[in-house]
Image (cartoon, rainbow, N blue to C red; front, side):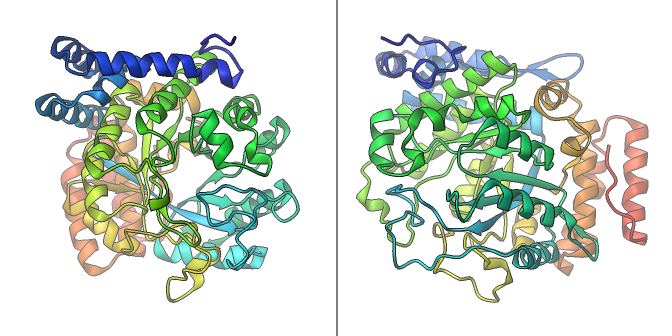
Length: 482
């Protein structure tokens, strides 16, 4: 019988079903224990130091107690502390990215995804390198600097060599003042050797959603194809780390299994990465199951409402305070607005989830992986963020300066966000305003930048940032960074 061990490299030991069941029972027994809940909340609260803030984070058991709690005033306190943590470590910056779908060929039988092998009426498409280039130019014309590439699992149509060629093409495209400066990769679990190849190709974060941590459900939801192997999939991040990729992104697809189980498994996976590799996940994504071709989310019994979704997001922020959190255009403007306050630090904008979708005048639906709820343009998203007090950031400086893995976490924990990430965000925002923004967005943006520059603590850093922004306005000089 396997025993729970966060330092183990075996999936059944670091995502241990018995430990999760005991955690859920403990949480249920203590969900009305006001004294314990207050104690956990106090532990989660950021503490001011001479250099910035520190946070203790929460164990999967502590965080599960908060998730189970249904006391309104305690939930409100969770939200308040989640916002405090978000502002302490990420400030009011929101990183912007877009997904780029390369191919919807897939050999798996995932029952919740329209790309599954048995779906014979969805058009199958794979971008050529010329088509990749055209998509990148379209994304650059929108103003994007950071992409997350997506592809189905198909060793014949989408081998690692194809992915590597696409990454090379993406980085090679220099259009007007546009460049894609960071390519994150969301592809199927693979070998250490292939992860090394991805690292050598210059990827940012390797992203892989677990979908569900419940092994029995996982096997039923992935009945055929290589993704059926639960252990190989769940242990992928350890192979990625072994291959030299130190920024990895976790996520589950909420709605497939009971959310409390998924939440505990997700936090345990983060604890495992910290225990084994000394650094937790760079990002955690919180997608919800959505309608798509051949997929009806109502057929699944575990959907979650918006209030529960908000509580999950807040509890993740309390448990893993230094980790970036991502919300995509799966969610509506209203939902995204609420979650931005509760810990989310990255959003997609102007997204199209179809293969080749960015070069089409009208949004194509026939090859979409899921319905896009937030269909606003990137410019509309950027303006909306600023009108709600957030700085849209197109920054990729840490990745290109080698501040990844534990080096990024050290920066985050040291309180240097305002002297480093804050000016970088303002300079990349200024690039967007000058090269791509509408008149309204430009007006709102430069007014925000003027006020936000005043918040940079170090005089020299502030003066350099101000001069760089003047140079961005008055010349074609770009890509300043601290």
